[in-house]
Length: 268
Image (cartoon, rainbow, N blue to C red; front, top):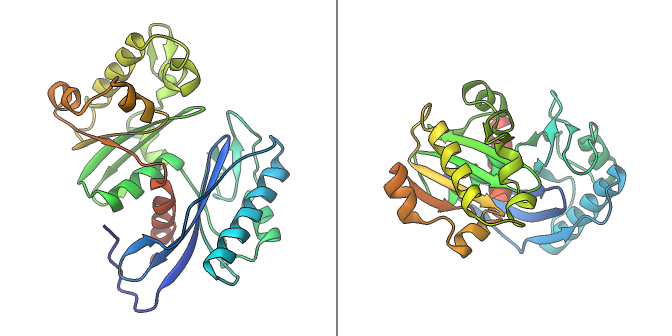
């Protein structure tokens, strides 16, 4: 399902979702609805150096645009792992990989851009993209990767990072048996040990969040996809334990979502 638009002329966007180790780029078209209008290109980052990461992203942007037959300057929707700078033009901290405070400027020096895009939370982008694909009124999302991403969606939009942290606090500040939730639930931890304790952490964290909010949907993404495949989490448990609908976030959801967030920021 797409996003309604009042525009008569189509808009063409390049969506970028960069995690700690992998980058995805896809062409997105808006003309009454939002849709992928070409294949998603996926590459692993080949270096931990900031400039080379940006150069690899720029190269992938050019390749996807060429495949779609699009000429510059390009509209970008941009989700990038790490804590964004106050001006949204780069990252000031990252668990893995370097902080790149001037990321947008570096991209713009390599690829002609239309305007100056802002970085958006990859967790918010994934939840926004899920709302495009499978509509819901409200949802709480957890995304396991090199860290643990969280987001909340209600009244047609996701909370900003600041709104989330003010209302719910970060998972990295909530402890379970001596470790914070991020330390327990990022992929590198639970992949090497038996599942029971990690299931307990997830249940306890969700129960803690439900003391403050009451979403319709619990959305799990990133490496949590393996939990679905292994049967560590089921729709039946989510319904019986919390009264929530369980949703698995697609890997491509953040690509739709970062464009949705950027369009909203621009007032489109």
